[in-house]
Length: 140
Image (cartoon, rainbow, N blue to C red; front, side, top):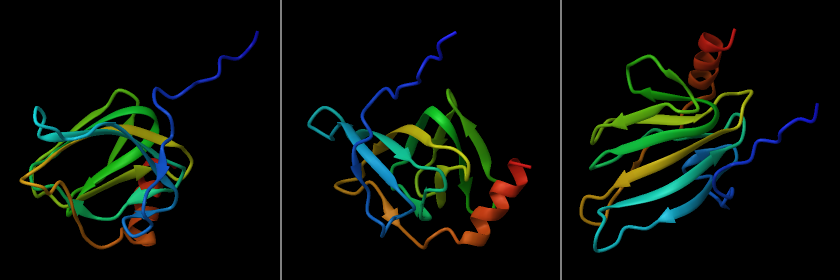
């Protein structure tokens, strides 16, 4: 039987800054903030092992997982394993990170709200040790 090749909903997009992402991550903008919407909508693709740095959103964010396996973790709490179909509702100003598992590509749609002209506050990188511990916990 022929295998069915899985294709992403949106193109991979453009590379994201290594200042805010570890590994290779890409953004395909779907809808920018405009006079009708106080949010931006984009598809973010993380190659295996890629992740954001710790960060916050002044008006919150929603993630909708469309492909692969990854993690979401709030500071001081256990990480959550995420798979296709999972939705994460991130409250405003909650320090967190998200990204791919070590073995899998990970794609999510991000709906990021704005407070005035700001939608994210970037903080410090997720350490390799923090990332390794999360992967070991879920991927034994």
